[in-house]
Image 1 (cartoon, rainbow, N blue to C red):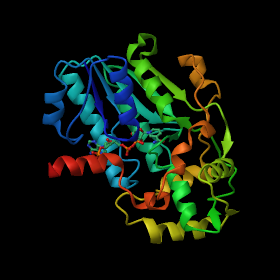
Image 2: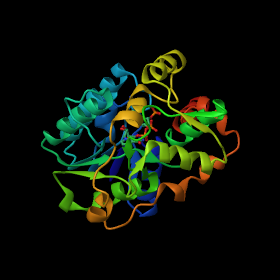
Image 3: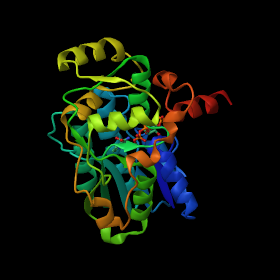
Length: 301
Ligand SMILES: NC(=O)c1ccc[n+]([C@@H]2O[C@H](COP(=O)([O-])OP(=O)(O)OC[C@H]3O[C@@H](n4cnc5c(N)ncnc54)[C@H](OP(=O)(O)O)[C@@H]3O)[C@@H](O)[C@H]2O)c1
């Protein structure tokens, strides 16, 4: 039996579909990640935990520490208590406990907690992920809808990225479950195309049928506008970390990272942008992540 934390999230939903599709017995973890009693209860008779829960999309420092660091600590402790054999942790490229950027720092600390435990583990460090319900391509497109006739580029637009399709990442995580040769390893995965942010923007604009003039405001202006507009949002469409990621943190690794470890070619960005033709795209900016809608529905029911 496998338990998946963060199963209701953007990546978690694809992972659950992959596992169920392969006939692998998996259930979502239900409850808050810092709840020791719920974790101990739900990890009884579990062999593997796929740990995806994280607060990256909310962007707040304190919450990131609470969920990504203290939450992971609690997952590790509860897994040890229940003799879980293995934990598969989803992390990010450039994760480092001493990183300047909070998201990368908390990911680095979560990696340490997992790798220094006595559990078998595999850490998958992924590049930024795109897909139907992402908060990456959808937000770039939704923002461009509002800023007609311009599309804003944070930084110079030359920062390199290798976006990975969410279904490919889900396949990697599902493969990892059955791959004992990946024990005690940290593996980096990313798409095979190395794209500059401005190329990604162009692909997003084309896919959503928009024509915009790309402009590069000074970083201080972008940061100020971002703070004024988005800092107080519960689910900001773009977090401060994402601003830095798009402008200054190379989100790259070996271009054949997926093929060399998992034996398949991940899909290209342009192959999976059909979701950007959705109606009312501009309102996506204000949309809660689907997991939150589900939570509300469950709550009402
Ligand atoms: N998206 C990317 O490009 C990317 C790339 C590399 C790594 N990652 C990592 O992959 C993981 C999943 O990312 P995602 O894009 O799927 O994010 P997401 O859509 O925001 O999903 C986050 C998941 O974590 C759960 N969660 C958050 N706080 C929680 C808490 N206190 N207790 C229990 N569950 C909690 C959420 O459930 P609720 O909604 O119910 O709170 C949701 O199911 C994160 O750790 C992220 O850092 C993401």
